[in-house]
Every structure is written in C-alpha cells, then in structure tokens.
Amino acid sequence: MPGSESYLVVGGCGFLGRHIVEQLLARGETQVSVFDIVQRHFDSNVTFYIGDIAKPEDVTNALKKSNATAVIHTASPAHGGKPEIYELVNVTGTRNIIDCCLDLGVKKLVYTSSAGVIYDGAMDIVSVDERLPYPTKPLDAYNRTKAEAEKMVLDANSEELATCALRPAGIFGPGDRQMINGFYQVIQNNQTRFQIGDNLNVYDFTYVGNVAYAHLLAVDKLDQRYPYMSFREPIASIDMSLG
Ligand code: NAD
Image (cartoon, rainbow, N blue to C red; front, side):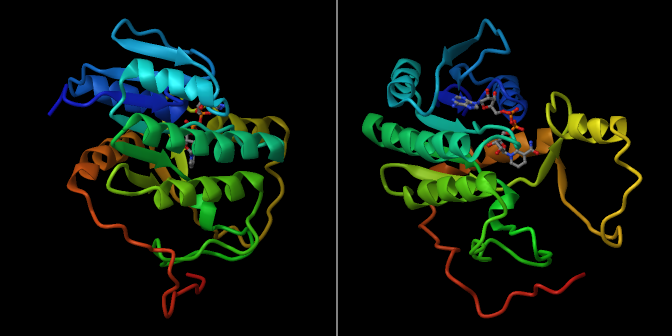
C-alpha cells in the first residue's frame, strides 16, 4: 500500500535509479529518499543524501535519517574504470550497505546486479537460467565485483533482512548516459567498418522503465518471505549450445 514503506534508492541520481524514484513517486509513495555521490535531480518531495557508499558513516547517516525500511541499491561505477574503483564501490560499498541494513533493522534490500556476472567473454550463453554457475574466470573487474556483491546480498537473505538481486543486461531509454553515447562514439571514430565474427551475435536489451518496474515488483514481493533458494548449486545439464 503506497505510503507504508520508506524507500532509500541508492544511486537514485543515476539512469536506472532515477526511473525507480519516478515510478515510486508516480504510484503515490510519500517516503522516498535518494543516496548518491552526486546530486543530479532536485525534487521537493524527495530527500537527497549525498555521500559515498564506500564510507560506512555516509551509509549509516543516510539510512538513519531516511528511516528506510526498504533499500534499492543501484549504485556502481560505470564501465571503463580501474579495478580498484569497482572493488571499493561494488564490494566494500555493498558490504557497507548490507551491514548498515542489518544494524539499523532495514527489512528489505533489492540489489541491481548485472547479466555480466555469468559471462566470461568466451562462451555464448543460450537457454540457461539462474542456476548457471558464475564463471571461473570473470570477464573483467566490473563483472567480477558485481558477482561478489550479488553473492553477498543473496547470502544476507534472512529472517531479519529479505534480499533479492536482479540481473539486467543492456538497459536503454531516456536518461541513458552510457550505451547510446558509446554507440555514437564508435560512429564518430569511424569504427563501424570492421566486423568481428559472423555478425550473428544476439544480446538482450531492456527498456529502462521495465527494469525499474522489476525493482518495484521485487521490493513489493519481498514481503512474501520466500525461503532462501540457492540457485548457485550446479544442475545436471545446461544447454550451452550456440543457437
Ligand atoms: P549510472 O552510472 O547512471 O548510475 C549509477 C549511480 O550510482 C550514479 O548516479 C552514481 O553517481 C552513483 N554512484 C556511483 N558510485 C557511487 C558511490 N561510491 N556512492 C554513492 N553513489 C554512487 O548507472 P546505471 O546505468 O543507472 O546502472 C545502475 C545499475 O545497473 C548499476 O548497478 C549497474 O551495474 C547496473 N546495470 C546497468 C546496465 C546498463 O546497461 N546501464 C546493465 C546491467 C546492469
């Protein structure tokens, strides 16, 4: 029921985070706060806490002052950074969020993971589900640290704190600061004359409004207290054929 929960959207000034904030407000939520390292939006009905998730005191401050009962954690550095920044924000930062949620009695935590957590850059992934194990050699530091953060969030699922992780692939839509910009730079740099492979690769893209809506559904459904399911256990056969 709108108004019964107090939401803190971590990374709420980012592309996806902003859509989550807007959808929460659009359905009539009255307690919506944002925690981000920069402020890019200014709403009279949203409280913004500016800080760094890598600093436990900043996280504690935002969680305490917002009286959050549900945290939606979308913050991450963009692609193309140094490994240290991913370690700091994705791993240390997510650890801080989990610990502060537990300390302060937050009931729900939804984490934006990434489809990249199961991709090693070498093998096509076709017809698999969440039971596919993490790769032994992650593609890069971004994917490795997103996987580490995801594992921590799922392992924290308990009677005290109900958690969930979502794995979007490519996200497109209004406010995108990475994907179309990247495509545009490729065109500007005349890098479209080259073809690597047979040009038959497929990739998933999801509209940002749908990804944001999935986060709202996840945070709502966490009320239902599903038992912990370890989908990381290997399954007998997974169809990894090219298709
Ligand atoms: P974004 O860069 O637009 O938003 C991320 C937000 O996190 C930004 O507002 C940024 O300021 C904030 N942030 C970064 N470091 C922080 C820190 N140390 N403390 C506090 N805030 C910090 O990115 P996005 O595209 O909206 O991505 C959101 C989430 O979705 C990320 O977790 C990303 O890994 C995941 N994801 C994105 C895509 C995509 O195609 N955009 C695909 C799969 C997964």
